[in-house]
Amino acid sequence: MNYLAHIYLSDNQPELQIGNFIADSVKGKNYTNYPEGIQKGILIHRKIDSFTDSHQIVKDCKRKFNAYGHYSGVITDIVFDHFLAKKWSNYHQVPLSKFTADFYLLLQKNIEILPPRVQQFYPVMKKHNWLLKYETIAGISDILFQMNMRTRNISKMNYSVIELREHYDYLEAQFGMFFKELEDFSLKEIKELI
Image: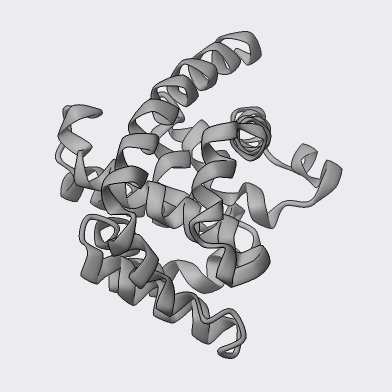
């Protein structure tokens, strides 16, 4: 899953949201350098990733992006965030625009404890409102273009919008089935950690 799903799957708990968001920038046991709630968010993120990567539905969806090699997983994560954003009102009572604005404010208030890499990309993320952009195919296209630029045009991820459009209904249906399982899994893991 990508940023939006990880934040959403934090049970509306701010420290879990921060940890779940920054986890990719925290390696190994370095998570112990953070406050306890953020540590738990990092651990939840890792469990979500393990569950996601091993799930057959996700593996099947990744095959639709096989042309992009090992970037197929990144693309699938972004596409799944698109479906979450598109159907946001089915998942959360707070409108996506407010949810994302509140999250940016939470990051700003805690900027000093974010890893350096996150501190660097946070202003760009906020300025371009990446989280809200997931809502539309045009927004996803822009995000994939930016990701391709970060790989120095090696990944060609920007072209994966073609496969997204081609397999849109299939991917959306698969996301719906998978995400229900992921929500249940995440809540169970949070209850066990807390």
